[in-house]
Image (cartoon, rainbow, N blue to C red; front, side, top):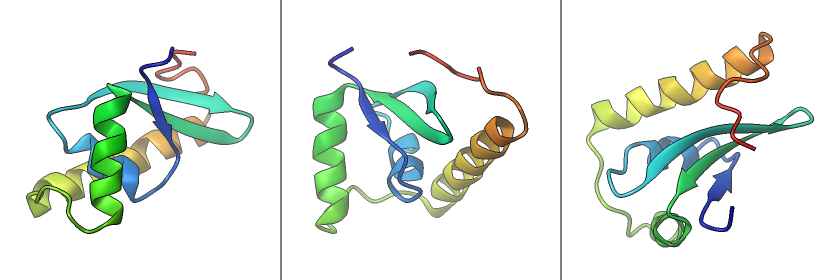
Length: 89
């Protein structure tokens, strides 16, 4: 799927989870690596560029902390045997 942005970055993923302009599609596992999938790719690319250049949209602290928890929960679920969780490959 061309319009999918994938990341395993522990800083980028929670940030993208807070953004209303992108949709979280699920998780794809490749070996021991988990990729979090978002759409649309163009919007994700723009947000990641803004994030990297410190020009990203402001995020409510509670929203960001909730997103970090979600990221960690998904990682632990996959490590604990939920290998098919959110698998959209």
